[in-house]
Length: 201
Image (cartoon, rainbow, N blue to C red):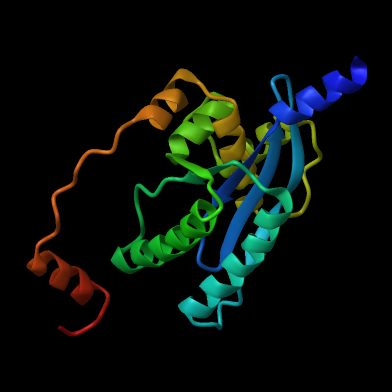
């Protein structure tokens, strides 16, 4: 009976992938969640040399991520939502890495949810304006692990995965939210955006 129960709990376990996207350093975390607990399978960063061009950095990061995906076989992808960027070019670059990660995960049948930074901070620490360092300390405590010397991108990814697996009423609302249709950008708006990136049109 105990042997069967152990297999039953294992069957109910869900593996969640948390991603803090970046075109040079992307944080990742694989969490296994059962009805009663979390287990950290692996977390860290995927780093691409800044000297490489964007497309090669994407290949490098996503190639390493795909090997991890095939190893841990997660069911769910949780990613930090993009709600601001330093400039238009930064937003477009970040959009490339988010899109590449999403394609790799969706090809494997994974679900996808994104969470605003404030929601992750609120979920983990109870304070939507907490610092990254406070988030790291609290998520390590929540998961019962020692904090290492890894960049904050890694602890952010842990926090995102933990938020997905430990839903509050707000995160449940975000999961169920139906996207609204957005007005398409005009040709002039696209031209203005490209000019901001320093490209003549």
